[in-house]
Length: 216
Image 1 (cartoon, one colour):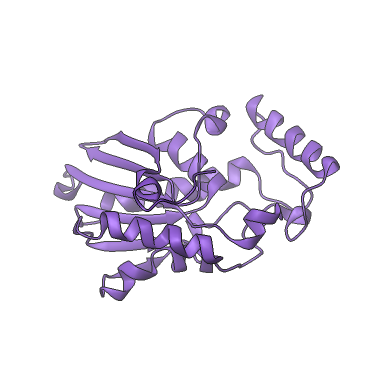
Image 2: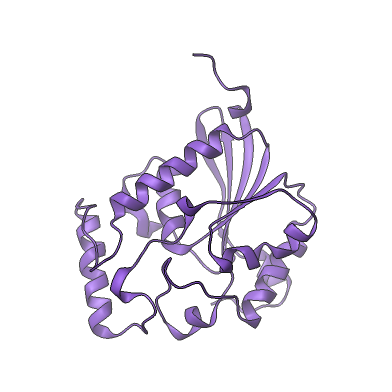
């Protein structure tokens, strides 16, 4: 089986969506709550666009959720090809979705993430998705990235999905997901050389600093 000539080198810019009111209020979104960006989120999205509009992206890839679409809106206005992928939707948080986080919910969340750190990737909240399920779909997306013909891509996803994505890109065990930070519009810049992904930037927020926006 011959090697794919498009795999040799490409740059992928991966950002988390901008802030929503639910982010600000501590309400769990997951993939079942399809919120829009708030005013700060729109300013974050604009700041990212102003800093990276001249990169020459050849395509924009987002989840199927509105908050990612709105974050890359300015790039889409340029007429760039755009595709949506359920595989990079946020993890489904089940019965927690749409609810403001409480101490009891936080304890349940910690119990599940502790199970994941112990290697029990099939553990999940009530009605929610497991780390194993999340990793399976993120892995499909990574294979799709490898095979795409473009050299420069912009990807917009979500916090937990990105933690899983970064682990898998660096061939780290899923126990290490929480080592990867994710701020609203935080940028991970990744270069694919041959079969290996190399990180050039991790959760970079310099575009917010340039725009004079407060960094949480």
